[in-house]
Structure formats: structure tokens, C-alpha cells
Length: 400
Image 1: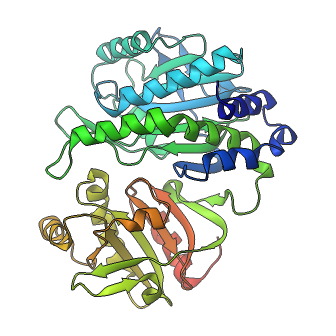
Image 2: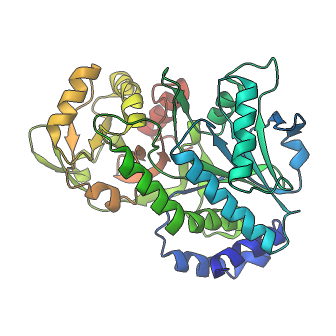
């Protein structure tokens, strides 16, 4: 077993003992070379649940008090990213078992299917069998008889994960693993970037699956282990390593504003720009692509936000990383009816590496001085009252 896994296991045994982990965090970060940017470190109460397992017994978050919980949501009829996600869960469970820590760590998978309960439970059992998951510390939960079909999808939303029905027997969703400490506090959310839920004209499904396989096999475990270690040792992290607070829909607000590197891109007329050109106004920088379905779905809400707040003091800067250039952005805007957002393009896609972004959409909130206040990985409802309030306070310079 590699040293990173052992660091994680020590953290689990410590069960919140910050002193036990203080000496090893720098080593963990150095080992990962700070390349793993999927982990969002948080400190907030985990949304409660009381659901039914495949065997018909109920299980609630309160029942798991005193244990470290690794939780993920799954659409059991998914045939691409979800099986890869469960393969990662099984590898983590195996390591826990080998060190004799099954009593301290429990794995929870919650199904979001809206289809019939009996069929979903059959799928749940099949997942357990196919991945040889140990039911001793792994539970597959779902809604009970008579409960609304969207119950678990709404729960996923409370955890910051959107499961969207396409109307064609498919759910489009992100791939996220949540870490909950023994006291019921959510400490980390580990994402996998853009989902593979549905193929589009601009999206190659096979490449997506290869990407997910590569992430899971080569780096996925390291990301989750890092997040788990941080979840136990968060209080001893240096200022700025973890967010000060979590805003609406999982928006992470940093302890102090962060200086951003120089970023070059173009507007719809091919005019070269940098973030310095926006200095003096607050901006919401959304990194997206036309082939990314969650990006496409959230774009109307960004357009609405720009319509409400856009002006001399604020702008939504939707920066596309499409290799095909500005023409695909213009076509998407026209087809979707986007009226208030300007078109920006970075066909080199250097914006993602420059800003430490490995999954789209990712959105940065930048203050009047060009510093990053916080960011959100994944799609959001940007014109919701809570988001509008966050942007308004940023425009007015009111601290969170």
C-alpha cells in the first residue's frame, strides 16, 4: 500500500486529532505536487438523510455518528462514469479493510433513480455484487415505498450535485465524492470535472470514458485520500489553504483574496484581452465550453445575472475554451437566445491550466482589484436570490 494511503489511514484512526496529522500534511501536499485541484475543502453540517437500504432497513446520517463517512450519489442505470466511480469506492474500501479500519469508516452510496423502486434495488444489489463491495461497511440507500421519486435527487442537490433528467431515460450529473467527519460535518467534496452523462454533437463519449478511466486509475485515489486527510486535519491547515466559508450552492469563499496569474484571451472581434482590462469592476469569470452539457444548461442563468447586475461595476465574463474558436460560441448564443453576455474565447485552453482548473464549468469570483475571492466547480443557478446577493455584496465591497 502506498504512503499516501497510509497517511489517510492514520488520519482516520486519529478521528479528528489534529496533532496526529500536523506533522504529515506538508509531506502529503509535496507528494501530490499540488496538482490535485478537484478537492474542495469545506466545513459545514452535512445535509441529513433517512433512507432505505437494498435489504429494506432504514439508515440515517445520525446512525453514523462517530464514523468517518465517504458518501457518493449514483444513477444506477448509468453505464459510463458511475461504474468507474464505484470502482474507486471499492479500491478505497479495500485499503480500509486491509488496515482493519472497517469499524471507523463507512461508505454510503445513494441512488438518484426516478424509475421503479424494485428495479433500482435490483441494480443496487448488482453493483454490490459486481464490485464485490463489503456490506459490512458499505450501504446502498434509496427512497422507500410511497416516497416521492425526486427525493434523492433533491438530497443530492442539497449536497451540491445536480442530477438532471433528459427525458430519454438518462440523468446527466457530476461525479462527486463527499467526506463527512465523525461529528457530522462535511469536510471535503471531491469532483471529477465534466460528466459523461450524455453524448452531444460536440462531445466524444469514448474520449470522456477514457478520461474518467485515466483519472480514476492514475490520480483519483490520490485526490480522495488527500481530501480525507485534510478533512481530519483541517484545523491545522495554514490560512488560505481552506475556505473561510461556503456560500450558496457550494461556492467556496477564500480566507483572503488570492492574486491571479496573467490570463490572455480574446473577445468576439479578436481583440486581445487580459484580466487587467477588467480591473476596477468585479467580475464573475466562468470557464466553459459548448461541448459541456452542464455549461450549456447554466448559461441562461449567467445571462440573466448579467442582465440584472451587469454594468460599470460588474460583468459576467463567460470565457469559452472551445478549440473551434469564437464561431461555435456565436452559434450557441444565437441558438440559445443569450442576449446579455459578451463572447470571449481562449482556443488555446491555457486558461484552465493557468487558473488551476481541471473540470468545466468552473467559475471564479474576482474583486475590483483583480483578486480571486472564491470559486465554484460545477454548474449553478446563477440568477438565484442567494447568488444575486453574493454578487451584490461583492460589487459593494461588503466582506462575507
